Image (tube, rainbow, N blue to C red):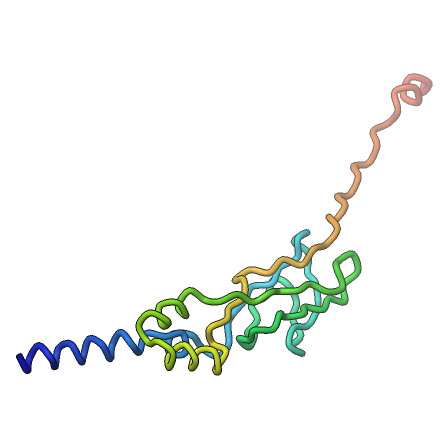
Amino acid sequence: MNKFALAAAVAASVLASGCASIFNDATQTVTIVASNGQPVQGTVDGKPFQTPSQVQVQRQKASKLISVTSPGCAAQTVADSSVDFKFFGNVITGGLLGSSTDFATERMWKYSDNIIIPCVPTPTPAAAPAVAPAAAASQP
């Protein structure tokens, strides 16, 4: 019976440790791209970037405001946070203690892995017009 109790205690401690605070870093890598595929310059959390780019953002409940200085693109894009699914596993296995740890460290939050900055499509250069048929016919 003692072996069973020891095995159960080990299993419970392993399951209880499976929380977002352990599996998630304090930061998250997000990819930022422009909808038109062109290079765009901006900042997020005070860090400059140029698209396409991978940026480290601090996990928080608050939304991230992405500011862009490039013409033709939205000046600001909001990336909303959501609860990471790992948090729910901890609610089941770790109960109040584990879930409150995830909440206090803010590691229970995540952002979309890909953030798209809305920009107007880049116009394609117009092809040079061919010689007009009337002009070609009037030449000797």
